[in-house]
Image 1 (cartoon, helix red, strand yellow):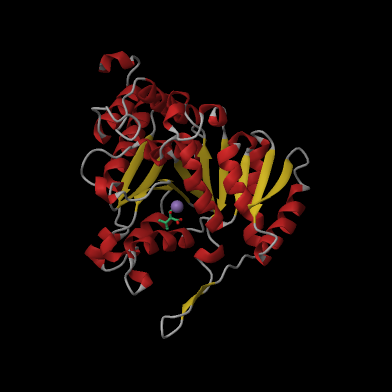
Image 2: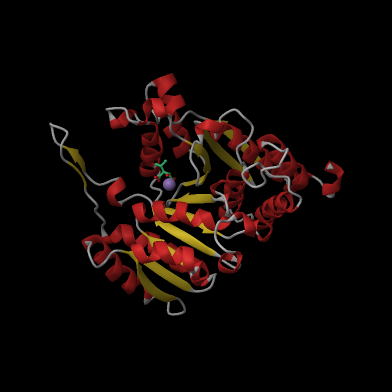
Amino acid sequence: MNLKIAVLSGDGIGPEVILQAKKALYAIGVVFDHEFVFEDALIGAVAIEKTGNPLPEQTLNLCLNTDAVLFGAVGNTKYDNNHDPKLRPVNGLLKLRQALGLYANIRPVKPYKDLLDLSPLKRKIIEGTDFVIFRELSGGSYFSEKKTNAQGTLASDLCEYSDEEIIRVSHLAFRTAQKRQKKVTLVDKASILETSRLWRKVVQEISENYPDVTLDFLYVDNAAMQIIINPKQFDVILTENLFGDILSDEASVITGAIGLLPSASLGNSSALFKPVHGTFSQAKGKNTANPIASILSAAMLLEHFGLQLEAKKVYEAVEKAIELNVVTADLNPYSKFGTNEVGDFISNYILSKDELLYF
Ligand code: IPM
Ligand code: MN
């Protein structure tokens, strides 16, 4: 297969961790005879510095004319609170999501058996957890009207949803549930919010097309608690943009480290893959950041293009790294391995038939 991949490494640890994902994809290309062509482009604070725009036109055009986007992270304290929101690094990502029509953000949560004791939650609670969050990504308070009055004393963020926006992400969630444990949990605040009531009505209607899937509803406050006290009850969590953002960081606690969580953002004709974590600027350039979330995001990219065996190989390589303790310090405080070494191990494992060669 021939794939053109735009690489938007961005800020903070983005470039270091994305480099490891590229190495893993390169190795997959060699072993399975695919041609992955990478093209780098600017996004976020580095793009502001070089072009004055967090999403330069050239980057946007590249992303619109590519098969997939591999994305690192954006943000930089120097610019994050810029008075002009258009000049904030995160705006590069938000504009890109909008321009590419990325409406579904998929975030799987499944702890590794060798890392169960890393989580602050008890082993018996998290063991066997396997769910996926479907976060609506292009609507809600992220993208509806925003206002601050002239005196700077009053502000509002409208939260708006159309039935169309709810329908498209919900179908994806139900179709995924059909291939899994056949359960969708809609997380909302229907006791208070009009948008949540619309979500309930629309999702209930959609569920009639999927009689093999059970649908239940949970208020977001209760969901935040249930994710911690009984995460095994979930299969597919479907929710709006902001709730999904919050719950996915919370859910990362189950896996023990946010540096393990990948995500896929899908639209009708575009797809972007990025770690759930952010820029982690304190670690920038120190070769300490965990590259696994980025490498697993690359595996999700492979799955998206139907390359299941290839994705499986990446998952296997990551499992092996964890099993053999070739991990960064967030997973093992005594580790002598850094970002690059973990990335090397994983790409070498993919290339090699015998991982022991590398010890
Ligand atoms: C995420 C991030 C982004 C979000 C930020 C960087 C805009 O937190 O991907 O979860 O809030 O969506
Ligand atoms: Mn987030």
